[in-house]
Amino acid sequence: MSGLACTHLEQRSFLALEGPERRDFLQGLVSCDVMKASPSRALYGAMLTPQGKFLYDFFLIDTGDSFLLEVEAGRAGEMLKKLTLYKLRSQVSLRLAPEWMSAATFGENALAGLGLPEEAGAALAFGGGFAYVDPRLAEAGARLVLPAEGGLALLEAAGFGRVPFAAWDRHRLARALPDGSRDLVPDKAILLEAGFDELNGVDWKKGCYLGQELTARTKYRGLVRKRLLTVRYEGAAPPPGSEIRQGETDAGEMRSGIDGLGLAKIRLEALNKSEPLMAGGKTLTPEVCAWMVLPKAEDAA
Image (cartoon, rainbow, N blue to C red; front, top):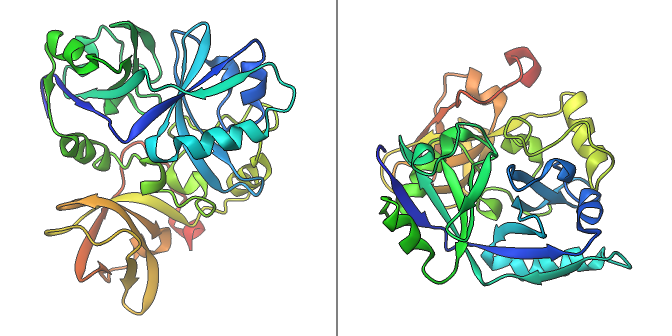
């Protein structure tokens, strides 16, 4: 898509973290290096179980006075309770932040239209909130924290045309970008299978955090055998969770999708075989995005 397109990400909402110890508090719980967050740099990361399995993903915006976490709206209350369990005596307060809304802009001129450089995570003040380049991939466009009242109008006044959420969904599916629990099964998914390494969602130089040991072992022992990949097919999407078969072999599982385009967790060894991948009666054609770094064929078997 070209031009200036924007959409309201209604499935996302915000948590606010305030207090002098908010940075140290969060640092020990999440996969990204919170110390690198600033009003000019947003981050992407995840919170894991102690066993290193996915719980929640988030975008972190440093307002200067607080942190805003853009999270899944349907699971925001659950994540708030989980964070509160670790609060103990830390000088930090946590709350839902309904005064903010999330939006995305994308298309050929989306970053320039906001005055942003083509640098993942670059952030600046906009419309009483913040605009930032998607920390995962600059090609994805920008995300915004805007006032809940009239936020989209600010973008439209800046020349962005409002488009349906489905247009954004197709944009991110074509780039194999996961969308929370739509693509990562809580308590089961492994970050590196969803590309968090290449998408700046894991910092390998920071100190310990919840679930770090399994994440590091998965990377350094070369244990990634499946990856979340873009798949194309004809017609309606196979239901999420549909088994993917390659002949008589289990080859993976379908995740989110719309007509003709989706994401699927696929065994890497299946990419080297000629037999088609099938799910829900559909033939799937997988695509490896340019940003992905996959193991060599002999290592994926």
